[in-house]
Image 1 (cartoon, rainbow, N blue to C red):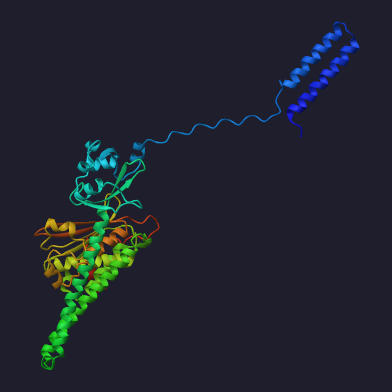
Image 2 (cartoon, helix red, strand yellow; image 1 turned 90 degrees about the vertical axis):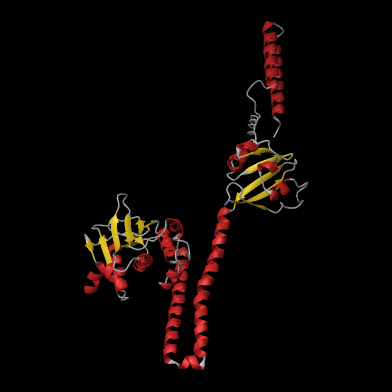
Length: 427
């Protein structure tokens, strides 16, 4: 295809030739000269392309790129404490670093900003490793005495250094909890196991094993220790299963009024004289909750069982069910016992924590009951509160959200103070 300029040139030459021929036809008069002048001008304009161009329009100029964000903006976008070190001093620090170390650190010597021997040694190192970042530095007591931080140091190409502080408090606490759990579980299992082995060795002796009374007494101890180990293993397995289901929200409607009656009846079958003191106070029209029936039954067994163990003989153990003013379904289990000193209340739900270890073991406790209760409540998106007055007794309170389905079965219409266990047992 000919170039557009060539086409315009050919057209201009054609126009000029036509003008000359027309001028010749008119002769050398004014008319001929006029025609030739007009034709020549038209040819020049055509060749110059004064008309609309055939070439495509030029591409628009690209918009200028936005300027890169300032270093300070980049640091502020990071939630964890970040410091920029230049010539040994703090050139920049984001809000996280200022909140941890103080706003005065800008311009300060980095060793004074992070007052820790291990940090000072790393910050004053002449050079960092050529390959990869240096090993993280653990800092204890930075911020508060219980906080643990990990400091990572990176060198930039211009010689500046970036200090990144990572809070490892929660991770270290979880690790300590795991180590303590293994140690406590091993201790709790080792104690009855040592008793079993000792009594078995004694019974294997011909003289001790031949005495019927000694044999019967030792076998009774062996049975008690074996059952203690069994309860502990069962609680450990139960706790593991509850934690595994922690993020699976239960969805089955559970009528707590009927469940309380069932738990009281099951406890009465154990022939414990304290079951005569069980009282149920169940309000009418309490809605069902979305829950795991087996776990909620275990929760009630643990709470009512604790109240029976630690309440004074002959005093009532009251299980109450109602709907509070916030709309939550609430269960309380109250005893009249010695109570618990306030300094122990925050730790009662820790695994293997006991206010009186000797008494708890003597009553058959494993130290895991309230920990299991706490995890069951958390799985059901509820709340556990423990209130105790020394010399008067302890109350455990559970708040659970009611089921969202209005067609779910409602609780029984019991009113007032009733001895649920006796009602079920007599029926």
